[in-house]
Length: 373
Image (cartoon, rainbow, N blue to C red; front, side, top):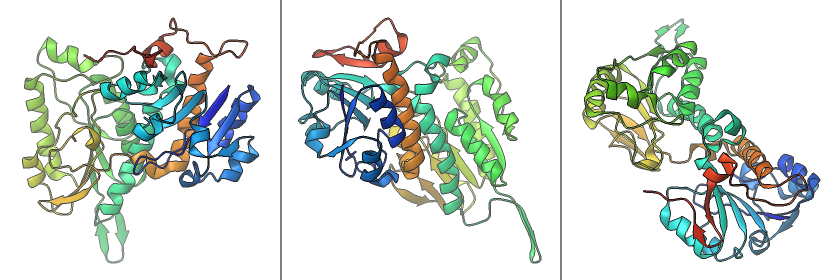
């Protein structure tokens, strides 16, 4: 099959959907690969490395002419115009964007959005959200250290002792847990909070203190368990108690990293403007939910702003700041997903009895397959 790997053109996107490692494996399976010129430059992969792996370097029109196209983010209108009807597109295509899915269906494209993969053990190796969230959690702490005007670890010097930074992590999914681990490695005193009771043990195992907000009703307990590995919106009663607990911890914190996201919905507010106003001058907030409205109402997407003496960082694509490793992990995710699309003879086949394939398929043969409320 002819596989195309185009250059990502979205502002700030530095990742590439294939690496020499994955291209070698695809070619060994009998595929022919065309990589757009310069596609991997920002991810530290020169064209010569792709050529050495066996790929052909071409222009955008040649990469998008592939029967199967590997993307990082969804194609824009200009890119859609280059894709042939009947082509297959695989990537992080935002399965909750009905307009985009409709446009791809109109073009006759078969599209798979990997963010929609179920959170099961079988799907772990192709879980793009986890592989990229891991990087975001790590980079969030480094960004916080960059903007924070003091040391992270406790230092004992001839001029006196410097206290360790107090770091508060709100949301202990993949990004939050990596943020906790990274902050601990940098010597900070770390606390973590999450709606799901099951993560208490994980937070404490990384050396952080868990901020416990007890459940008072069956409804609260049921929502806290989440669905399919994802958090669910919590009842207002619990949110009020959590807000009070977070408010108290936030006033004492030097750095807060918020990571709470609910698929397809606006991010929940975890850190109020009133709380930020009472934080210490020089404190830093890294809002990993900035792309979905933010966990703090003062966050501005893709900007660094200062409010009440607190620096709020709203980067919407932290994995792109670690482009080489983000691309390597993402390319492996794609490779593992593609194994599900080819039968033993190497023939392309969409098996809708496979729960992962069925979950990721958003449109096919001009029809929208995924329905979003």
